[in-house]
Every structure is written in C-alpha cells, then in structure tokens.
Image (cartoon, rainbow over all chains, first blue to last red):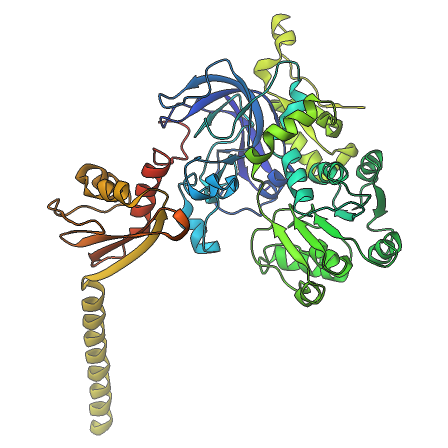
Length: 410
Length: 137
C-alpha cells in the first residue's frame, strides 16, 4: 500500500509499504477514505518528538471502511464506515472506565519508556513515535486499528467525509479545550492560536455559553476565520496583546484562557527568541511564550485550558501569577470517545459543519508538499483534507494516471 | 634514587590492589541475588488475579514476554500470596473498588523488567490481549 513515511527532520516521503494485518484478536483493518495532517504532526516533522524511526507511517486523523476484523471484535463488521479517534484505548482499564480514554493503561506497548520520562504513561497514539507505541498512522491506504470495539464510531452515509473526518481529533480537541474552561453564562474566553484546534475551540466556547471570545494569532487568514465564528481578534505581532485583552474585558481579564498553540509558539519578543535559541540547542523542550502571556492575562479565579501539545521541560513560566490569581489549570490529550456521540449529533443537526476549516485538498502523493505548506503557513493554509490515491475513482475509471493537484478551497 | 623508585613501585602496587579489590566487591554486589519489587493495580477482583498468577502457562506468558523465566512452576498459593522458587506475588484489594494491587517480587542477580511482567498480566486481564505496535505479524 501507499503511505506517508517519516525519514528525518522535514523529510516525509510517500512510499510503498506492506499492507497492515490483523495482529491481535481485537484488531480491525480500515481502508482509509480520508485523512488529514494535524498541527501536532508538524512537531514530528520539525523534529521535536523523540523516538521516531525512519519509515514510520505518519498520521492520526483518519476515517474509512472496515475491511477485516479480528476474531474478538464484536461491535464492528466489514463494510462499516467509521471515524477512528487518534487515541488508542483498550476499554477495560480504570482510566477507560472513567472516560479518561487518552490515558489508557494498556494500549501503549512502550509504556515503560514514557514512564521514565513522565512517571506514568498515557495511552498509545497512531503515527506518533515509539514513545506512544510505535503504531502505524493513518496517512496511508490502510490502517491496523487495535481494540477496534473501543473508540471508532460508525457515521451515517448522509454525512460527507469532509464533515465527519475531524471527529478523529481537532473537533473533540477544541471542544474539550472549551469544556475544560468550565464556561458559565457571560464568560469571556481568550483563545491563543487560530489554527484548526483554535477554530474549533472558539466555536465550542460559543456553543457552551461564552458571551465573547477573543482570538489571538499572527496570521490574517486565521484571524478572519475566527471572526467568521463571531470572535473578536487581536493580531499578536501588531498589538500589545495584554493591553488589548484588558481593554476587551473591561480590565477584568478573561474568565478562561485557551492555549491552542503549545510547544512551537512563534513570537518576536525577547522571551520567545530566547526559547527558540534554547530549543535549538536542546536546552529546553518547549517554547512557552503563549503560556507566559496567558498566565499574565488571565483574570482572578480563571481557568487555563491547554490543548496545545507540550513535550517536556519549560522555562520561566510565571507560576507565581497563576498562584496569586487562584488559577485552575486543565490540560492533556483529548478523551475523544467521550465526545464522539455528542459532537456527531451537532453535525447531523446542522449546528456545525466542520468542513469550514478545510483550506487545501490533495492526495497522499501531495503530502510532502502539504507538510511544507502547513509548517510555513503558505497560501493561507489552515487545514488539509487528503484522499488516498486509491479513491480517485474518477481518474481511475478514466484510465488517467495522474496525481490530483493540491487545490485551495475558496 | 632507589628510595624513590621503591615508593613509586609501592604506589603502583597499592593502586592495583585497591582496583582489584574494588572490582571484586562491585562484581559480588552486582551478581548477588536481590529482591526487585514492582507494583501495579489491575482492574479485576482479587480472586481473578489470583487464578491468573496460579496458572503456570499464563504466568509464564507474562514473565517470558518481559524477558523473565519461571524457574519452578511448583506454586505455593494462598488467597493473597503466591510464591514460587525465586519470587512471589502479593495481592491486596485496591481502595474504592478499583481492583487488586499486585506486588511482584523476583529474587534476581540482574536488573530485570519486573514491572513489564505485571504490565503484561494487567493487559491480559483487563484488555484480553497484550498490546503490540507492529502493523504486520
């Protein structure tokens, strides 16, 4: 089969690799109909996630058709159309029983490695290094899905792939970020980062009752998309962010802040430049500029929600400010299955069409270029929607062997 | 002159002697069997966990996968303690109905991945299989 594989920093390739097989009795094989590149894939692309091996298959946002199931799979059958959460959950451990699906005790075969780093390990993830189990990812024609009865959700034929694919990660991630803000009527929420997760966090914050959302980014297209959702925007590099936020909130500060940026914050302030230098020299894991800014901006008794990925040690975060203001911090990988039913209903009901976030489409063959465009934020790139070449039935039936060009969605 | 070369020789001999004794002591310490204990909580009743560890085949599967070997399958089992030659499992109910706390002790001369053995047993009991990141057999 064809798959997108990692070979080094900023080196991803499309290669022919062996087809996946049923390895364990609870496995299923999914024929991928759609996949996408996530912002957290860029952390791998840019070399900030350790324990990648050349040839590892990337991707954790995918959906498709069940092709085959193992002997112990009970709920799914070949032919079912499913969206697969990016987190792998066994369904039988204590965290899974408490709906803390991303913290599954049993799905990471390399848990001992992560335990040495973090004390405890989270669950396995698709296409996200051998720290998280070394599972092959979904930027491929086929994927092996372990513990298939726990996580994948059947989706109705009436909804297009473009509408439901993002249930695999960014929509639930944005929603959990907003839910972690414990929003009450009238609350003002500030969201740093208007990439795909930030966009869904903004819309979810409104769904959960926020009266105003302040969106902060440095890319005009992203700020425009945030405005489309009703957010008030601050251009990070053109304004004094703290002053703007104080102004927007009548001097109270936001009731909650969302850091939808994470470890690769871009800014031109002295602390951000120092972060960049330290990260380059591997003296620091993460660039924490957004955390510092949010810690300063957040109001008294505020809630700080962090869906942006952080990997290790960070410097000079004003913990005293968080302490002095009695801030509650909530973070972590998304417990995707917890939200799937509820969020699928919001799509079926027409409350949201997640395809709004797609700016570029292509095939697996286009993936190396799409990674490059995404990391450089070229041509208004916000989110890709990728079809495996095998599904280009129009081209195939016409007998035309050509890659579909990357297309910008107007 | 003769006195200085005698002192140098004595220093050399002394250093060599200390090094030899040091290596011997270190080697003895490293190869002396010692008890390694690791603990995990398994989300299953104590009786179920007890039966798992009394089953020589399943226990061997958990231990072997972690690079360990069951030396003697002649188990001496009680409700909360199962011992065998070179090791033992101690079971205690976890608070809040969260299953069974499992302490696995192995007397071994090398640093074995004892926790991985319990982890495999936990996966077999809770998830019905041992996780595997490979996508082909």
